[in-house]
Amino acid sequence: MLASVISAVECPHCGRVAIEDSYYKTNEFYLYCLRCGYNYIKSFSTSGERVEYKEEIWSGHGIFHLAKKDGQTKTILLNCEINTDIFEGFRVEFLDESANQEESYLVSYKDKVFTTHFGNPPVYFHLSFQERKEQLRLKYGYDESE
Image 1 (tube, rainbow, N blue to C red):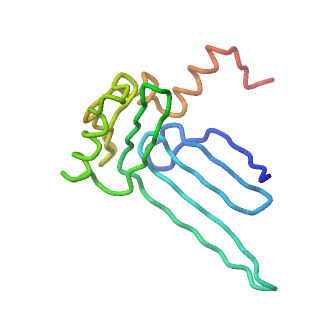
Image 2 (image 1 turned 30 degrees about the vertical axis):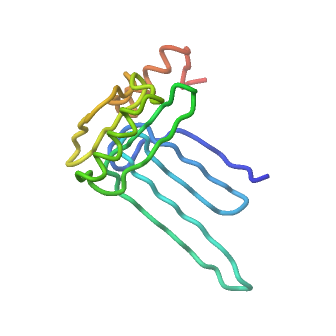
């Protein structure tokens, strides 16, 4: 079993809450934002004395989140701008009778602006990392001085 350390961090692309996932035993590192779609992968591998380094970055153009009535979910980070074909594909999935439209959404991100095309992103979706951190601190009574 691979062990990882997961934490919430500020997204370097949009300033919202991103997820940092570090697999310290394999030197793999992932950073992805479920707001703007930014995602970053860094990995190292060794072959004898040679170390190979791989890094991939996608700036993020938004997110499609589909919740189904049976509880299943699917989240797609958009690595390109939404065009007509992409939009129509997501719209068909969103309008399917198996979709829970109250919890599904398509949001694009361009020039530091989020645009909701359809659906309902969570109420905390647009909060900055610091605003969300403060909101959770107040809710759960976390004191950073402890």
